[in-house]
Image 1 (cartoon, rainbow, N blue to C red):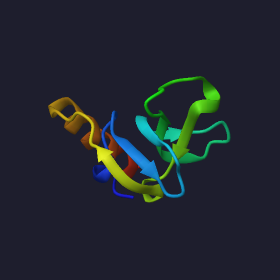
Image 2: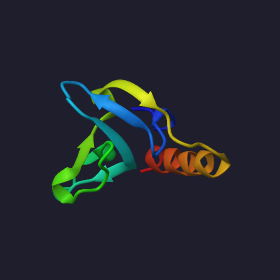
Image 3: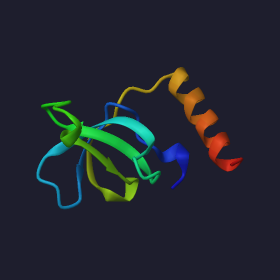
Amino acid sequence: MDIKELLPIGSVVLLKGGEKKVMITGVMQTNEDGKEYDYLSVIYPEGNIGKEGNFLFYHSDIEEVFFRGFQDEEREAFIERLDSFYKNR
């Protein structure tokens, strides 16, 4: 996946086969086993209800985007740094 295609934090999506929307709370996250995912999310509209309510997924798992989160110059700079990091590792 191209880092520059990552949705911003706060985006609300429905995952393929999902019944509830989720809100993205993190990008490029790693689980306990070291496996890397594009996103970390919580169920929407409930939000953080504990570890069992956190979901890791890939961009390709998204069925529909309902809301695109906030973007500004700070996020753009972060995405550029993240893109550079992944290209150089």
